Length: 97
Image (cartoon, rainbow, N blue to C red):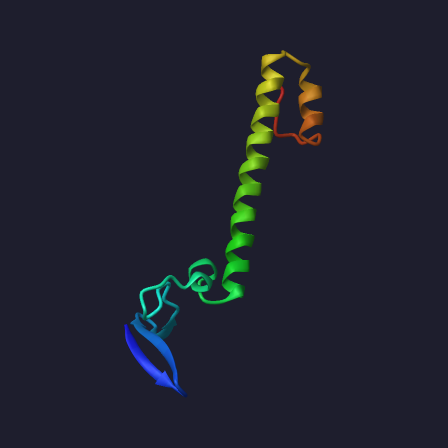
């Protein structure tokens, strides 16, 4: 990581596979924690994108577990197969044996 001084400000650069990129260190030069960079990754857009990604993953997990619980309850209570099909939106996923 290299330090570059631009108009009195310090910019940290790192050489990667695709060229140089700006790095937002989580620690200030005086060894204190830079909380903005630690939580946001350097910009608020990065934080928003991470939050959206986490919400999508958590939503998919909740939806999956909800559907599995409905399916398990259908088999536990020995309900009619048509009732189970209606709980999944009348899809033909459940095939009559």
